[in-house]
Length: 358
Image (cartoon, rainbow, N blue to C red; front, side, top):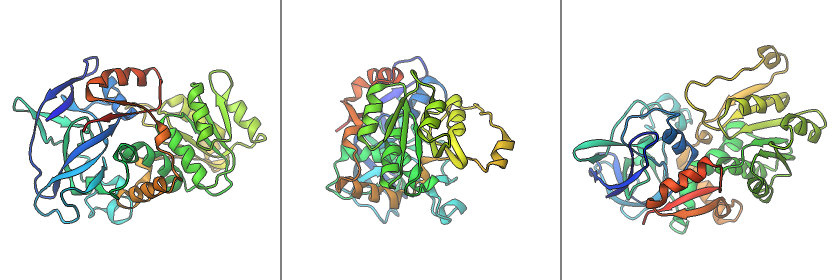
């Protein structure tokens, strides 16, 4: 099959012919139709996160089941699926307590279903969706309704799930609450949509890109702050009458913006780290203020997703036109254009880029 192979930071990705093994017991072979390009892919590309190389990047994908392995019970050939980059074992403490996004069973496994000249090529996050096919556990391919467009479905597999889920599942934002979203990329815009779905009150967004701020307003934001021209904390306090916001979501993954998001929350408020930071970073907060004012700083992994439940709900919301995925897509490319897509991402240009593979 064709796959985009990444050999390490500073080396252009190349599209190559690689081998893929058939699905084993409990696994399925997915023919990938579309894959989104996520900022987490960029973290690996730049070396912020270290993983075994060479690698096929990509984890935000959708496609159809091509072949099933032994003991697969819930999927059949031809099913339309969204890939989940955190498969669930359904047996560990986290899975049985309703938090499959924290499943530990697959985190320690470094396996590869791909090889090149007899040597392993590692799929990113057990998926590797920048390729024509992927072999994943059955729980890593979530069946969806056939009338859902797969070019939109792929984004539900990461950015939409992470953003909307951070509001609904992780923070559990109440109607009328004030919300700040720092960063208006694919995840940030999904947070805005999640806040709108919960009937939040003031929805404030902050970014350095004017086009992204305008798009956030279209998605339901009530106030926009260009943080290159205005002081974010000052503006948030002005908008909230010097109270601060009930919830602040950081969707970039930078230390300074995480600390700033925490500063903007009111007494009893909650700041949510949604953006994935580089490894080894630390943030600084005042623990007395945290305890005295009961301010919360919490993490969010994958929007606290329960993929088998949440993916179908997000698909239904899209089909009912209550969730806008179409407007998040700024570029549609082929595998051969992948390096240029990452260059745009590095410059902060565009919204979500998807790769048309089939």
